[in-house]
Length: 216
Image (cartoon, rainbow, N blue to C red; front, side, top):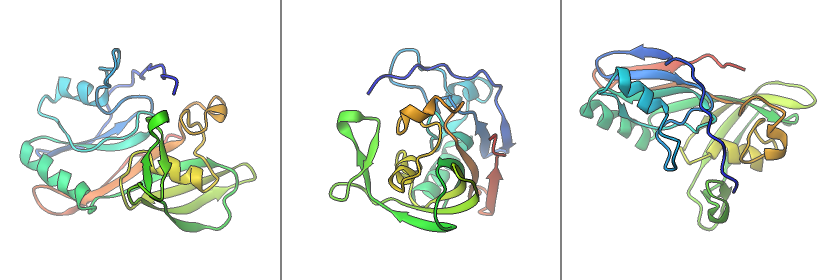
């Protein structure tokens, strides 16, 4: 797999919400969530955030090309609590995506196990023998002859889950340099945005929903 050129955006931090326990940000497309392993990839949302909030602790990640809601903890106790929200699948996420073609039907459920495509990593693939369970619900928002706008609700959190599931459905996400490189040049970015994240607050236990408006 050809290495991608990392040229992160210079947008200022967009903090959606903050209190004594957590920080919620709107990550821009093209910025790594955490530092990359290769040289020249130290710049990321986490490294930018700790410059102004040195106590910020990682809870989860978004793909580099995906934008949207991302939460950080402000102490170890909150990090542990929020981590369990994800691990126990109590956290609920929704994404907005634009995909190629007109999807038949208005909603559906994808249940396809995923595994790493090792010769082509970081690509993932459907693997009914060795794959880990992965499930995604989808709902059409709008469509025309060439594209469909959908809301995606992952029930699991596998790497590249939404991208591979929509590809397997026959409707790859537009602008995807990894899974649809021939088409990606026709779009300014991967058309995938983490619209909302709902979970229990680490201090109060209240159910909270954080949202970031879709930029496309």
